[in-house]
Image 1 (cartoon, rainbow, N blue to C red):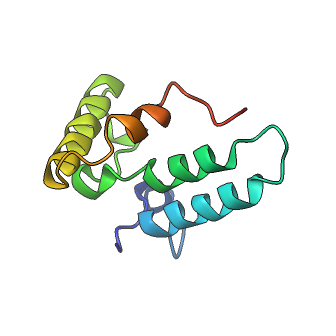
Image 2: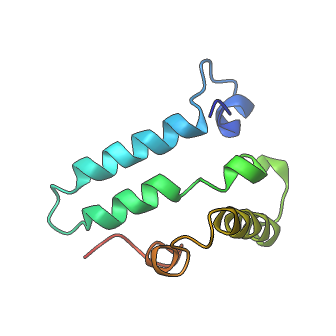
Length: 107
């Protein structure tokens, strides 16, 4: 994936990271964070890997785009549902629930 992070572009940062680079870095940080006793490393890694995956379909929507939070959430949920349908349902029920936005990666 070579889609650059829009917030970086909007702020004129040279050499903006891609969404893929961001997700990979987050996963590495989660891997290292497992050394902190109160952190659930497995859960952090799962969240890091999927937290921006809907952007592959809807793009990197930033606050500057003026898209209401409810609409952004609806678009991202529809993208995730589409991905799960393409993948045959996958782990949406079990994995998806374990990394919902309302859950935290702390033990």
